[in-house]
Image 1 (cartoon, rainbow, N blue to C red):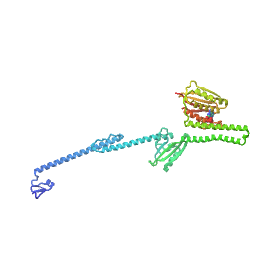
Image 2 (cartoon, rainbow, N blue to C red):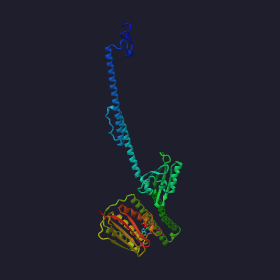
Image 3 (cartoon, rainbow, N blue to C red):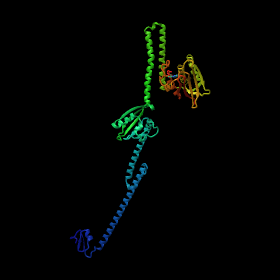
Length: 457
Ligand code: ADP
């Protein structure tokens, strides 16, 4: 049997060559030998138990993993609603391996990016809030989607929001609206400047197509009122200066020519001409001195020596300095200070310069027989108010605000040798003391110039 059927199990007369033969064998009385039958059944039972146990184990692992994953998903969702707060993701679950770490790393990166974006956003918002130029963003239909506070101010909306207004409603001026429409049509940058006389404003609008929103536009509005005013002041200054120089220089030239052409041979006439030349040269010298003084004051090169100064002393010394001129002009001068005035914090010589300037003007523009009166009184806000009142020609209402400008003269023919710089110098000196100066006048009746100076602490 061994030599014949090697590698087979022979049961009774029949060789078994495979496991199926073994299972299907039903020969003889139909039974396997009893020992083999027993061990095989045992083997099968063990196998089945092992299979069931493995299935149970893997099933349990599967359900646990699913449970952990759904827990992780829940934590992630909660983190999103909780502003992606770090620390809310379960990191120490061995079942999930490196997954929570990877998710946490991704969240950290997101949080960093969000932080960066938040800082950048806050910075941009602060710049837009603080900038003096107006910024508007409009959608393709021309509805405002963004407006900074300056834009609302410039277009007179105060603190109201411009959101969802139409560009036409906000810009109001047809030239500005045209510029926006040109940009919409051409897709190119457009610039427009307009003067709004009612608001005394000069605006410049720059319209840019919004590259991120097709059809949208970005509008930048600049208030050039101050720049324009400065330009006008500078232009006026140059034209006034040349005008002021031209008059005395032309006189000097004419007088010199007259002398050359024979007036020298007439000594009394020559002396008269020389006197007039002297007057013109004095006027030029005074103008040069006042211009220099003004530029030094304006550039802060005149340091003030602030001390405690008595208002009475100031009024007296200024009146005394001008008394001779006042009398020569046939005028009377009086001083009427309020009793019990506190001392002021001032540079005495500079304040005296202001008072002398005002008295000098009062003398120049008051006819003989008129009066000049000096006052000082305390206001209840920690200032002493000084005033110089005259009964002279007065100043028309419409030009009253302009008389403190450089070179401004109400009527050039009315001023005798004035430069138009005196009040400008006075305004700066008073401002350096922390006060302000103003004028009230009734044309034909007289003027009152007043300024305030803080009292000593
Ligand atoms: P000016 O050297 O011409 O006096 P100011 O700057 O002192 O220059 O004054 C400017 C202008 O203001 C004067 O030219 C004059 O037209 C007007 N003004 C100043 N003070 C008086 C006054 N007391 N009465 C009338 N007009 C005055």
